[in-house]
Length: 434
Image (cartoon, rainbow, N blue to C red):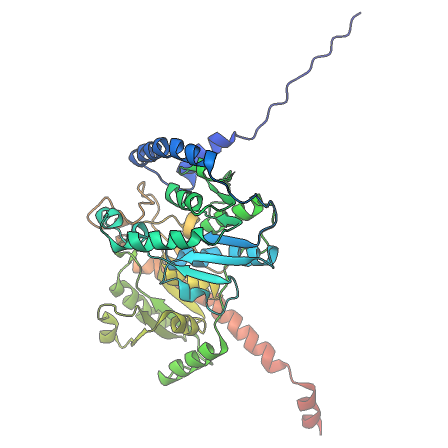
């Protein structure tokens, strides 16, 4: 009898990188067919240009796991920089001797003060990150283009060893290539992967934007040691916050609930009248005090008519006062992310944005949204005459979420106070005994 051995082929269950990149266009972003076609045209134009330049230009050797100068590119909005902080903290730990430069927007730069995360902050107003109007974004006569060109020219002189970008944006990948970074780590699923030295396969299971950054670090062979956003205020800022609150009759013994009705886009604003009604109901139900925040240079607030004095502060001072709050209620906005980074529990009202991608990170946070809208996320380009995904969220639903949060937080506050009262210092106990 002849023995015949049958060898079964090993079939991999992991999808191919190309399939993962294609799927990422639906899982991690929402890219229209029109935009995909435009990117393909850009790639067709850039490929021969890049191939020709690469034949003649000389770049520094790829340093592998070592890097003396690192560039991180995140020039969009406040919340985006806050979601970047776990990556920056992990990066600082993994590259303690490196000089880290962050390219960001002027409005977000104050967030990095007193944090010790980067060695240099460069600010730039990138035209396509400043406006919603497509004409304003790409107006060739905009002064923002000259500012961007000056910044790119300066970056070319820095000779970075390593750079990271998490946007999966062909424009950012192109900037890193032009800047002549030795090792360029980013995503290619949004176009321009050939402009990078390291094209990272996206993680479709961990979809939050903060995780997208950490994926880059892991690709570079470094562990992501920090996953929760964190910011801190200085002692001087803490003293300012205490004084500002005391001037309004608010003290440390009171439970403060911060409310911020604003957001960068009108399509993300639930409505100031709704927040006022919510504040009145919460004050009537719970032993709390409301701190009503308003953006500097904002329009006059309806809170004035409802005995809610608006508090309008610069970013760092706003952070200091916010850090004294026990709960923060807001729209999907930069202040929402700042609150989570300061350790303040959040109740956030979400409309056109996907909470799985950009929601507040942390166990005690709550998100209120209206499910069932097929057009979400629309990235603030609403298809309707107004954002019904927000307009159909009732005050009652936000009140219920806020009440659940307050019941839990007030109980914890009471338990801590009880423990503190029952713990008598040894010296005090001796004096009492005598």
